[in-house]
Image 1 (cartoon, rainbow over the protein chains, first blue to last red):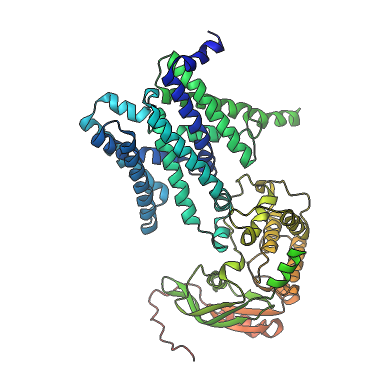
Image 2 (cartoon, rainbow over the protein chains, first blue to last red):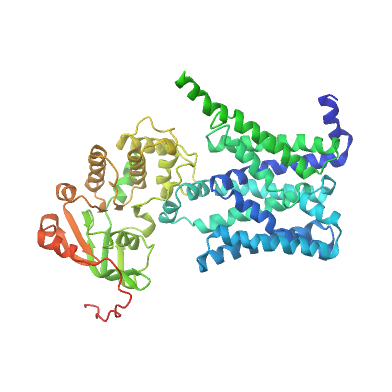
Length: 289
Length: 259
């Protein structure tokens, strides 16, 4: 099979074209979110939130079936509730944010699975957890487009305060910047992106399209802007290869895309010029020799 | 030209005054009924033993801690215009940000979250970096800087903030003599431009050499005024007597505020 044959899956099948369009738009939106999650050391927070939105999505599913807007509203509500609850617990008790978030998302995930299995079948559970390209219909594409637009606008507005809040939160506070509002806005954008991603990737893996390309991009450049661009490109590349693999080998689309992103991540670790293994060990060989 | 005008305007120097202020944590005072003032354009060292409330004094001045009693007044600028260098700046040095961009944050009050950077702003940043001896460091990332270099970067940012009141919390800890000398010159320049400077310091020799005014505290005010009259052996002995630990059974303070 040639590359043209592989790419023909997109020209031959409308649902593959829609899935590709959705994933590419998602790549552009999710990459900057992932870069900032990584730089703020919140990589696992993204993961926790991805678990946390499941009961909301499930509740929407129970009430209205596979209706995008119902599941979105439910997921958004659950994500925000967990985020606010976690920060409240952190503020009022000695528990740190990571611990309170971990407890909440575990309960949340368990509740979500119970909710789905109460009504649906195992197929439904798999679909919500791991996504399906067939789920990306025109409504889902519209929603992904809206979320991506919101994300781009939000980052345009938030970029400078967000960088400042990451590097020197004390300074932002001293000059009268509102760090808490910026954090909440950022979390909101993250939850929106997770929900936009769950049709194609599933709730559990939609965080993967954020984190893996962002973590890989760290190995290719040290500049923040370039890092974001590299992350977008890697996410898009993972989407294309992953979707083709999922079609050809009949794999679930979400895991196929994330495994591809994982392979690109492994390549980045080895070959990346800034901190990659080869770059790291080559000068050492010169010194001893 | 415009920038110079702005600078002249805002360097009137601000006044900071504590009136019978008690500031503390969990009802235990870290500063007990302190009345002290820092006149416009003055340069004051805050001296005292560990736990005397020196950092608390500065944090209260910028409004991070509210006084339990009494009041703290700033005249001549808004609270958010005060430039403050904390003792342990919570800077994430692994964040991939070049020195130039980091220092440029000092222009936050002028450019805010969205304002575009103009040519004049870039020149101001370059001048601030030159002022602390960091020409050629513009594109270095924060994690490649030494401790002393990072302190210079922070001073460059303070310069750009163009603040009428500058608070420094132990700015020369873990900094070598040469860097300290150069940074003290930077501080003296700020003061010569009319800015009010308050610095928490431990090195009494440095205070005697370079700071005209001193405030000696040990949870309460011991002495305030010209450095020679404050740093006497009697006053220093009085400060040393102070007990750092909280007394959990201490009775509630019944002192009436002095009129």
